[in-house]
Length: 348
Image (cartoon, rainbow, N blue to C red; front, side, top):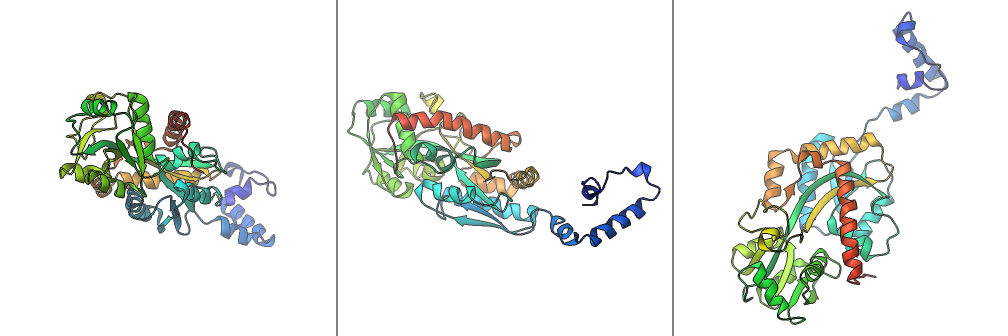
């Protein structure tokens, strides 16, 4: 604080080499500050971030993949930041209500937005938003991703992905794919599958991926594309059939499943990745502290093990940065918005 006051307009700049007694100057400045009534300002600005609890606002309800990931991360960030990190679930409108709350919050680092690809990318093409997903949010850290899996009911006459696509192609508009709602990741993934393979099938929207998966197990619908964390247990139990993961490399949690490239459907890459954002104009030093807390948490062996258990794959250290998150969000918007708009998907 003293150094800043020395360089202010009220006090001319000095250099230690030109002063006969540095302590005497410090005492003189303290006396001047007290005399001008600036002591309360010094006390307030002397506080370092964070000085109170931090709230991470999530776009979905408790218990889902995003909530689980966030709580694991927040628990480990707390000792680094030396403040509680509170998770608040604000649902509605595919996550846009929660994002809007953070956009309108003070840019002080105490209200943050954490969410996946679908809430922080897809919604911009699905809704008319009162904010800009890129301009009104300050990227903090890229966290982890959860690849999806192409699955079908066990009665499907297909032993591999090529045979599944052939079956769908031979039955235009007769087969059904479950989704967790119009414009959801499961829906958009199905649209991309249709565009890449020239196939047609019906979408059946559910109130969440869980009910859709239950009907897939029961054979009420034919196929689905969902996060690996949601369907892997059913695949391994033999209740549904898994064909390929929608990533460029095999999933750590399920190395037995081939990638879509290996299975014959190159470029069908879908990753439900998660990031952390602050409101725009959040001070750079605050963003640096938050990023450091995330990076330290992601390096923790316990956190890494728990992420593997829920199918989350942590990004390499050099990709856990604000700039990497900004670049990925921009690239994903450029990739997915045309897919959504060309399919005429719109949620009002």
